[in-house]
Length: 182
Length: 308
Figure 1 (cartoon, rainbow over the protein chains, first blue to last red):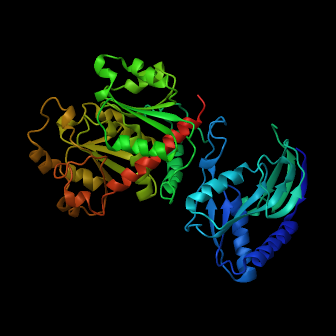
Figure 2 (cartoon, one colour):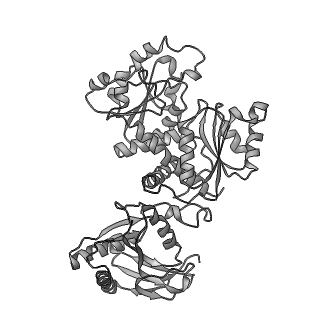
């Protein structure tokens, strides 16, 4: 299978630091801001960001994991339902600025479902989207990220593979591959 | 795997261990959902579910209806007491008439064992058994196992005593299948007249002495005496039953350990359970009721999402 490296470990580290400084610039001391990692792959990125933000600014940002499986628009359109993941949010988002964090923005459908799921925890003052990889040409919904690490031009037949050392991979890396069954 | 091996929930007997784990895992996700400020998800918004109850029920029916509404399904309720069943309509005709109004799933309770199995072979809809006579009550067993897992961390390796009227209980049979598939040890306990003759062939321990059963178990699932199903006298009086098989605080204090008390409801206070036990910290009866909604949401979600 052909793989093309998009970001290596060092480049991901630089992007994460840039994200932290952009967030600090826009959200000051995070007094009224929370971060939500979108399951299943957003929480790894979220945990890295929260740790790095604490290192840089000394602030422990309020964060949680959000699963949107029950809000997806492809239920009963797939052969079988997707397995849900844990939602772990110990606060309400009512009146707060929420930053949704995910690894890859593809069609925009997961983000739409996530915003739907998020509303169950209150009406936020503002919602922003942060993704590591923005697949610019494959969007189904009018959703754009407020913060992105890298913007790539990919085809539907391609897949963006995100590897994290925390998940047993050698190093953090992001690749573009061809789908096995496009 | 995120798919059930069946398109109907007729009983626990025909489910695999993977099916049970998938239902329990999904129920844990729905338990979180029903504790949110907004307790509703849109998954089943294009599904219509008929609750067809040929036998009385309050809690199971309410629990199913809440589960359906929290999944955003459209719900119609049917009870045989005020229907054309009284005019001689057959079960298949009754259900096919309901289905012709574009109903996708049927939740059915019936006094005849096997009625949902029969229906599943004759109508085009997902069938969920909400209790068929003295046969099975699968969602009750699932919520019992979910409650045990939630309280004790796991079902595997735990000792569960089912105490009371085993002979007339569909809850007992479904629980035996479910607990054994999940790796628990099961004991049944009750007066010999209320224990089925060959129950030991299911691989359960049989005990007549309630004190010994309580001393053995980690969890006591106490069942109601089902007087409405008893055509003959199985014991001299409720008072005598209570004296020998009723569980009270004094009995529990004689044990050298703490055990968990469960009951599928409705409780006959002062008969199988005294009030001081039913309302004590040992009891997880109200948790069972809450878990019932989450488990039923999981079952409906997984069945609706599985293409037949």
